[in-house]
Image (cartoon, rainbow, N blue to C red; front, top):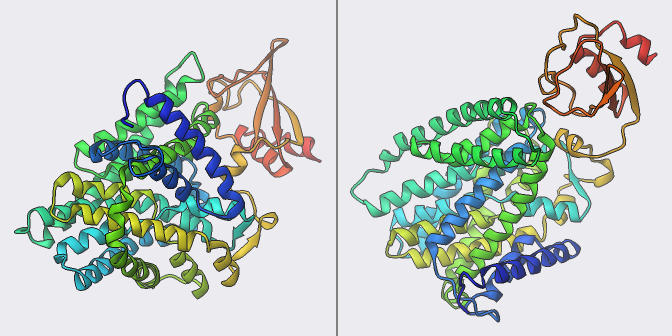
Length: 495
């Protein structure tokens, strides 16, 4: 069956529906959703029961880039600075040095056991050097497990920020394969350019995006997520055009926006959470359709050796070397190394050699697909077991909500206060979004001139307004008074 304009919506919606049902089933058995989504794509492909013919690496790469933008931006929005600050340098070291050490060790091993040149081996190593935490946490949630100490934020930070490094290494080593007269040292200026420009523009565009979202006045709440999508693609494309790493810029701009007050923030975050899931499913389905199972069979032998080396030697080596200067218990280092799942990102990066037309592009793609699949099957299905074995797991009931989870939750607010705004209070004339209100507090209503107003972030506070504020606890209510600079009423209202 060929995909046409007439049947693409029907085929796509059916595959999407089947993937969602498969994902729901996977929670019961602890199988990563990635495997189910890929399986649906493979079974629907030209060599599966669906018989859908799809052999367009360029389109698959485009879908992959678009999907990664949504996934990384959503991950940035969900990243709490308060949570990752204690582990920031560990996460950055894992994202840069850990990825580099993993890529170099795998590449050298591939060069040693195959007829690949050293640059071809390093290219394959770079492609499989990044991790995918989406499948990790879906399994941990399905097993009602939480992780001790700062393991979860460390893994979240690594998974959100290591894709740009893997992308850079893939492009750099691909360039060396195509232009073998170049020196390996030529990638150093490219690295500095990509990382420095990408990081700088990520924060600059994040700040500009916040200004645009808060200053522009749209008539409909539903347009704000659309505006955020437009800004996200501007960040990526502009950074890429200026020679920076677009993926890094998108992630950092998401982190910036997620940790600042913006209009309709909860609506934007919920929309991107749903879009990130949609893009993951679409991405996995596309990659599943692109692969030919009969082409995987010839590389199973070498693929097994590479998978074993990656899981048991290269990943632990990368983790231990990148964390050598940090204090961390040995069992936690081992667990971080075990959570080195390879997911859809390496398969997307494997399309770059295909489009470049290098000699071993097909073999690289098939090996990467096999390595990613075995990594998820071996590590993904044993995450909860290894967590208990290494004594790094906690019951879900013992897990505290992260700042992002608390912000997004619709829990009942048990504390209600009516706060009168004096005439000369600093909040008079300011919009609610500019008040630095605690994230766990909401202004449910404003009483003004014998009328009741349902506020939003754009609502301007006026003198003598009566704010009806709801919070979860007294500590948050104290933060509300602090943000309004109304100290005199704190004891009166809380005693």
